[in-house]
Image 1 (cartoon, helix red, strand yellow):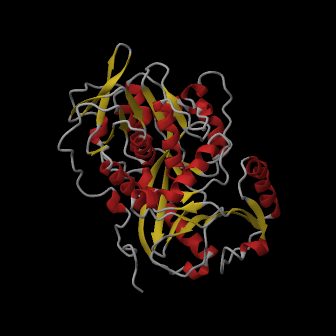
Image 2 (cartoon, helix red, strand yellow):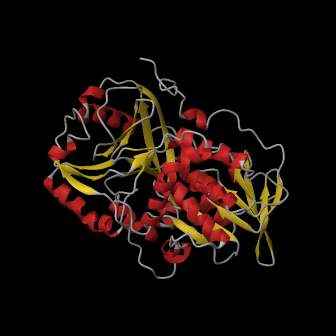
Image 3 (cartoon, rainbow, N blue to C red):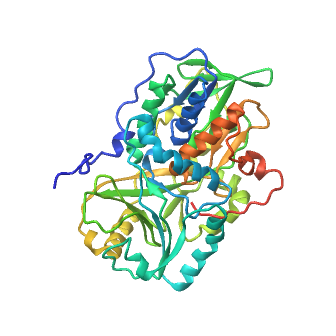
Length: 455
């Protein structure tokens, strides 16, 4: 069978972050806003800032989309969200719907629905707890029984009691979507600077005046730090505390195979979706790896509830990551290479246990896919916040410096909506999306830390 979109290529996804990093030939002398980080949130924010008439530069130390934004499952879902981020997600799915037409490139988006499957009647009853939120926000989410599952899943060996189903949810292709949006931004006059690490921030009169990159300075009246797993480290160099811990997720994709699934399916064993190339993106339903570092101890009190919530999923490990973080300086000379240049791309090896487990579980859930060839496997680093929803807002200690991080594995789907809301915040325009509940200071002002969703 002829594969489309290079489905059998062993580096179809990996090529997003492999190969040499091409440094910019020239920096802009000044822009209105500098965005640190070339992930989906950073590029989307720059896109909407540019649409509002502002000049922007996106500075990415490695490849655009080279870290988690290019390594995720590709789900674009409203279902199961924390109410604080749901308005942003609903805006996001509207943006995804028209994004291919708007930028003139296919991002692989399709609305095919999302299923959270339940093994037992007790599990199904627990899913009912989210239905009042769906009703409040006017979503088409509903509970379906075992018979209803047959409309969406074909030939599964596992018997489910039913599922929570949202027909309007969708999926896109990470390896296509972000590079396409970055190219569109560049065509519109935005500066997309890969291989351009930001070492620090220029401050004048107590507020942001620009950034210092490895290739020189760029003046700006505002800076957005959307650096994913690197955000806490960067902010610490400015003496701004952003609580953030990281977990590793392992993912694989198959060659094209039998059509067993209409939309996205999450089961306790696997997360799976159909790909545009006819294969499947598959990940373990219950394995995330957290390498213990000094930050694990530093932020443990803030993350206690989240860690307890994920205690059956997060697997702890002790290794070189502890020493790597221990040796990373808190501050550095901006005239010399920074920690961000030392590691251009976070490219962890896929977890062997996770791959072995998900390969076995795929065949147990869908016997028709048991012998399907694995075309490619990879891993990504997910940054989480203490309450598992984003941290978005201006730093109290440094006017003009904004943070957008802690998307907790939800960033790809919510990215365009987050970018729309963040651009409005920076440009002081009302988007109708309330970002106050996501403010950075909520972890230090006595507000309760209550995770309502999972990574």
